Amino acid sequence: MLKRLYFENWKSFHSGELPIDPLTVLIGTNASGKSNALDALEFLNRSASSKDLQVCLAGELDMPSLRGGAEWASLKPKDRFTLKSLIGGEDERTDYLYSITVETIPHIQLLAESLSRLKKRSHSAHSSEIRLFWTDELAHASPSVVARLYNGKGGSKKEFRRSASILSQLSGLTLQKDLSLGIETVVQTLQEIFILDPIPARMRNYSLLSDRLQSDASNIAGVLAALPEETSKRVEQELSRYISELPEKDIVKVWAEKVGRFETDAMLYCRESWVPEEPPTEIDARAMSDGTLRFLAILTALLTRPEGSQIVVEEVDNGLHPSRSNLLLKVLRELGESRKIDVLVTTHNPALLDELGTEMIPFVVVSHRDPNTGESKLTLLEDVRNLPKLLATGPIGKLSSKGLIERNLSEKAS
Image 1: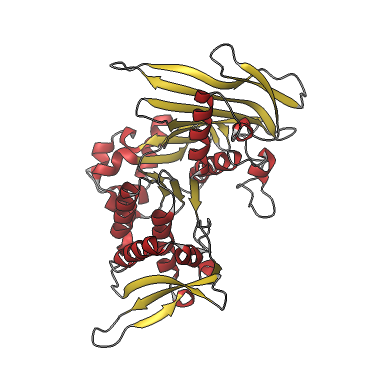
Image 2: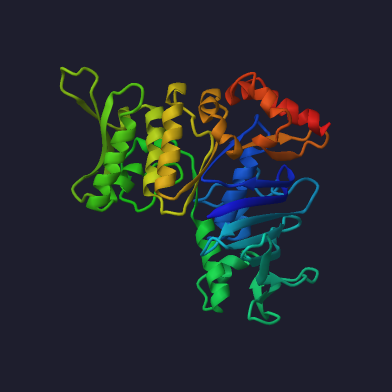
C-alpha cells in the first residue's frame, strides 16, 4: 500500500509530505494546493504505466492534461521537480522508497530515478537500505540515462530512454530476484492509484461491458453488468443496501442489465418506492439525480476495484446533500476496511467535516499557503497550534468554515 508521498518543487510546493492512511481527508481553502497534491498521484500512476513523461504532464488524445500541463509542473522559477513515494512491501518490516526527478525546461525528460528497499531491524527503530536501482550523474545533453541495477555488488550498468520512467522500462523484464520483486511491488501499487471524478451526465448513457471503472464512471453500467454472476449478486446487494440508507429512503434496489440484441451494452436501473401501499417504480440512469449517481459511482469503485488499490476522490461530497455526510463516511470506512482499499478525499463541506469526530483528527491533513512565500504546505490537523482550544469552540467543520485553522497556520508562519 502507498504510505507516504513527498514533493520537491512540484507545482505550488517547494517541499511537502502527504501521509496516506486507510482514510485520509485533505482539507484547505481554494488555491491552497489540494489539487496539486492529487495531481502528483496522477503523475506517478501515469509514469508507472509506460506513458512518456511528456504525455504524463501534457496529456494526449485519450488522456487529459494535468492541471497546468507541463508548463506549471515545477515550482517557478525551478526547471525540475522530484516526487517520492513510500510503499509497503511484502511484509510489515519491508518498505520501498521510490524517487523520480524530471526536468521541465527546455524539454520534459528524466534527470534522476532510484528505488531502495528499506527493511526494519528487529527490536530497533532503524532500517537497513539496499539500493535496487539508481541513476548515474548525467552528462550535459545526454540522450539517454545510465542506471545501475542491484546485483549484490556495485550494480550492473544499463542504458535507458529519458522520455519515460526507468520503473516502467524495467517492468516485465527478467531481473535479479530482489530487484524484480521491488519493481513489481512499486509498479503494481502506483498503477492501482485510481482518481475518481464521477460525471453524472456521462453516467446516464448506455455503456459497453467493461472490466474496470473509468475515472469519470461513465461505464458504471457496463462494469456492473459484466461482473460474474456470484460477484454481481453480492455487489448489487451491497449497492442496494447502502443506497437504501439514504435519508430519502426511496431507492430500494439498484442493478445493471445487458441490453440490445448482442448484449454488449448495459444500462443502470433502480427501483423507487415512495408510497408503501403503491407498487414501486423502476427508472433508468437517465432519470436519476446527480447526487445519487455520484454516490453510486463511489460505491461501485469501492466494490469493484482490486484489493490494495488507492482511490482518490476530489470534492467527495460534491452534489450530495449535507444530510448524506454520515452515510458517506460510513461507506468510505466500512468498504475501505473490508476490501483493503485506501481512500484519499478532499472536501470543503462543513457537514462532512463535523461528522469526522475527534477520532479522525490524526488522519486529516490541512493544505495551506505560506503567507511569506506563497508556497503550498501540508500540515496534519493534530499539529495545528492551539487545536484543543479551537475544538472547544466547535467541531472541525465550524473551524474550517470560519477559516480559524488556516488563520492559526498563517500566524505560526509569520
